[in-house]
Image (cartoon, rainbow, N blue to C red; front, side):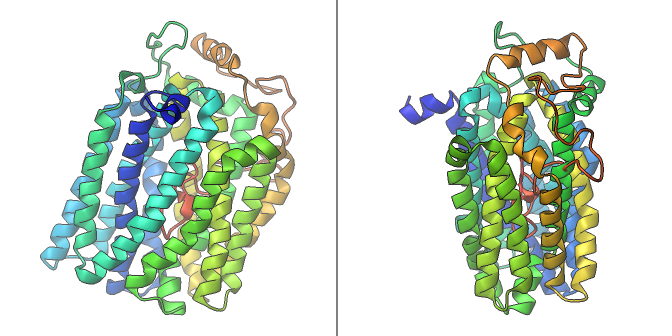
Length: 471
């Protein structure tokens, strides 16, 4: 075993490879869907509805997906998710080949891709703490985020543009093959990845009712408040990025072949953020990184909104992408550390149902604003994200006080097993007061960071996010 693999935990390399393959397929398909749609219609509302549909599965299927992940072998869940996406890619390829492609077909495919993403991403987040020591979560999340951004932006999307220019059907064929490979890698993960297990005995814990997981999320005031903040910031990003492809193609005159080059430029920021986030957390603290990352995400969108040409728009987008990636790593690690393993799938599903459930409406609102001007959604979304960041600054800065020590995990898990779902009814699990109190319109911040996980890079590479997905 290599030194790097030993540091991150047994099986992490295979999980990383599975995420790599899945994100290769995601990146190819994500660009192919809007590019195909642009050949059928130039209506901003129609394009934004396709973007919105990518988030709908999180609203409808987020909690059920979490229940599936917590109850069955997580390796099988990941493989099944990619089987769904292979089927969807094959269906779109067949429709294109037989000249039956339509916006409706693309909408159905987007929903199926989203359902697969819901299950796969939920399982990936739940598997990671079983394979990696808590002290290495930031490093592991950073490596996965870097792989997601690097493959999405620098390999998948440029290839997708070239494939699309050669033959409209090719991106879906390549995407389907990527999903197949990722599913096979998921099945090869070690047994430790299958289900949550007690760290002391190694035994699988008794099933925990969904109501206990929901009470855990609701009663943990800091976690609940962060979910609200992430949802609000993520909604602002979703509103802004709903018509990204249309902006670059129509406003800035980027050809379909070069859309992948645009995303590669944006991806430079995301890759840098993913690679530096862990070091920034170690040197500056988790709270300062979260605050700065959220501010950069909003500022980048405002920059796109005022950019006079594609070059400056890409540069501003890259700044925002850096902020989103920097958010994903410390927020993902914090959430994985706070939530006991036996509840992780359902709590993540519930949190994303709240946050990503808001994104469809935000995306459609962005499409409506784009009818006024294609850059208006970026100004509105960026300003909204900055406003939420300012209001929630105190909450974000307190993140370090809420990161449990390694020895606290067993205590948290024991409390849940006893049916005591509220780890933080007043103060948080560590006894620190919770800044911001209960989530209110005035002080609480929203769920998921910027679009997490995926929505992390927004509609252009979306999730997805997502994956601007914040995990």
